[in-house]
Image 1: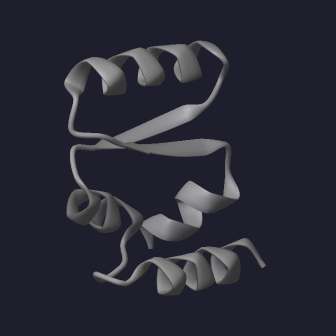
Image 2: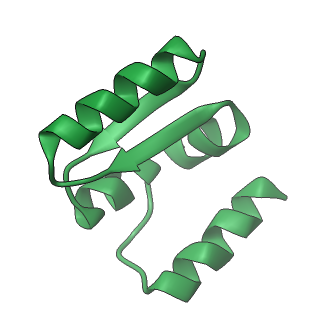
Length: 68
């Protein structure tokens, strides 16, 4: 399951529709030693995390359960 990998290591998911922002953040964070995944919108971000479409508070709850 992707979500376990992404939230139990030093990996950051960047979600933004502006490619220049994504490239800048990705390059900066990778230089700092983070593994970085990117998505161009929220739905793609959820796919990268390996979860279904959820509302904001549900996503926070899922994130907290992954961190436990």
